[in-house]
Picture 1 (cartoon, one colour):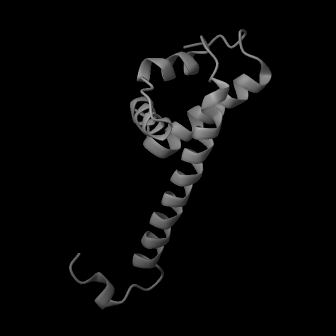
Picture 2 (cartoon, helix red, strand yellow):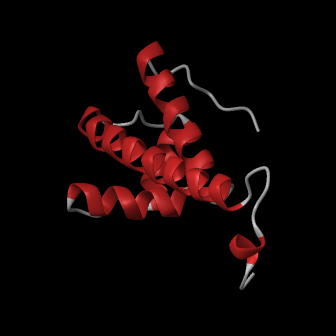
Length: 104
């Protein structure tokens, strides 16, 4: 499906791209409702999945007021992913000991 971004400035199109990448990388292919939920919690008011759908479709730009909360969310999620990756590496490194594998 072709998306018409002609109504967005270059900056707005870049922000849109970052929102899509954040959502997909953090939550997978059905990311919009998850991002709406976490963004709502971050800003203290409801952001619905349809609103995020408008941003993604290019019908509306991501509001400037949402950029900073989205940045905070992105940094928090990136930190969480790094911690999880470290745990996976520690558990499944080059030579897990038999003790490490007990209970699996």
